[in-house]
Image (cartoon, rainbow, N blue to C red; front, side):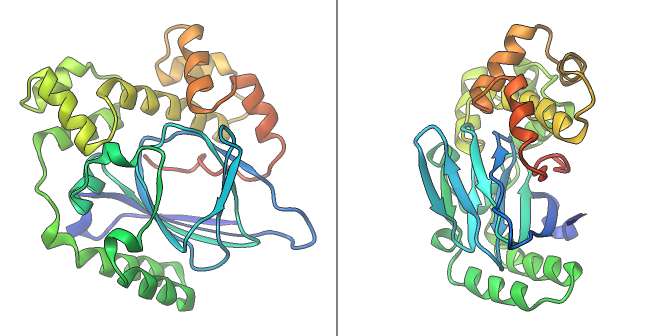
Length: 275
């Protein structure tokens, strides 16, 4: 397994948080594991130039194979992922509001949807995947994706005070009051809520909950020896009831069941994410 994170091109840093490249090869004589992937607050653009990704929705009992490139907006529902035997993913993580600025779409229409990138970014997506499949190293792959995104930069919507405020919320791990964020956005609270649904896709309260939950879950993947009580406190939870409630909503199970599910797979898909 190899995982690398890259700072995006300077011209992209206003909308893109990071570019991650992850490669892993599984033994073809074994069954592919199914990996838990609960809600995360970051919107992303993915490229899969090798084996396809299979997504399982446990709530609906449905499964589908992803296109070679997909856009993932606000995620509230937990999914399970089966990586290919020859897995390579290039993931572009957007700042809050960044995907909206790129696509010009109200993000509340993308909640828990996985959308083929080609539908919104055109046929150039296919060319990018072909180039990525021929690339010989991660740095070259990063540059291919950056060159593609730079074409869209002149068409991106301008940054608002709201976008900067929500980036501050991500950095603070949800530990900022919503009234403060509305004030920093130069908006009334009702205007702030509407802008959040448009540019983030969720209400401010729900988005803040997912940020806090994601911090706790990623800590667990990265540090399985730490107690759940310590993780809850570090993530900003002040009582066990809210902690367990968020796990049931965003991971679909209680923290103790998360441990059992993680024990069944060697992959830790969120432990290294940089949100």
